Length: 565
Image (cartoon, rainbow, N blue to C red; front, side, top):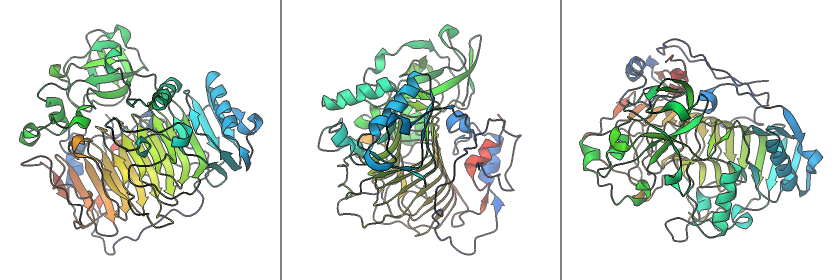
């Protein structure tokens, strides 16, 4: 029995109908009832938001709301093509009764499927012990269980034990397993091999699309000036660009940091901000945005998503090569349970992490539960990926979801974070749905968070959307001063129900520049009180405050999908 997106509720302004391919998984829904939180009684009558009417008139250039209607794998397709079944892990020696290690057998099946050109690897019903992390390193390889209630993987070791200590590039005793790596890790084989080698050599491996040698990647062509929202660009030499290719649009900041100012919305506040000492933030530029080419006609290159930023000569705009991305791969229909250990002190995570996508494009996870993990689902320099019907549960996590190192255009929908099953140990930290490191145009949609918060984690993420979410807002956001501002421009929170009345970066009109806060609960500040990073007028908008779920469209992402470009 498949799933499909809910139809948009009445009242949305719709311009045409999108024509995208669909994806209906033939997997069972996660076992057990979905978590639910109470909603306030007596909501106000529904009405179409004025901000929505404005957006529908100019969807690609609205000053407060980003266009995210093509976020996710295959431009947000509701159905994705899956490769044919080529292997069953039991025939490779995996044991479904948990009596012996099955990691080597599963990894052999995944590697051989990839070496033969791809395919689906089945994990039949049962419980499988894994004493190593699982790696999907080839494109078009899918690891498929029989459903999250029928196939369980029990992970006995953490990434520190399996790979080594992964420290911070800024020194100190922080563990980078606090925000990287997974016990199911989807990343190109060559990329992960070099990363693991660097960790074991006690060197810091840059995790982004171009790795440590960012200046050595091939320039395909330089790009003429263009505007945010354009679907096509003019290039100087189209000879190395082809239809279907994933390329990297690279923008280099200038001495005056006008690129960072542009990401922050421009104007007097960003122009007066002191950027030079934000060393962590400035390490994220040149800015790298991967995108697939739809067509090449003469010197006109059409992209599958509109430009996220202006393209200006002073930023040396060019299309370049990138680490060969993992594409068309996924994991679905299983539960990953780590051995239950006490949650580590803040930033000392050992690496009992769930599922992580790194340098992945058009990849996905569906019907996945992770339990007793340090960090749940990760998007690290991953773009155009979909996480659907995912759930984090068990003893409590540092980052239930993390999105960082320039991760763009991803979709997390129908997700849930369950309440912890044991009290939080002293010295630990709970974040929630995390975004940082200049990550942009990501969507969190239709979520239930029984704990956690909207963790905008500095590093100036911009143009992200959180919509139709219910949250018991009891986490705290993170991010150190060297990472720079909490928000760039065009963050949007749309129809968010806060069940405990706590602010915690949900109502953002007083702190985020060029932002929109629409249809959220009344909230009050608590002890973590933030002030705006930028002085002066923020050009932020707020509508239907105190009336969550009452504005139409109910789900901003779903409504944007109906717009025809």
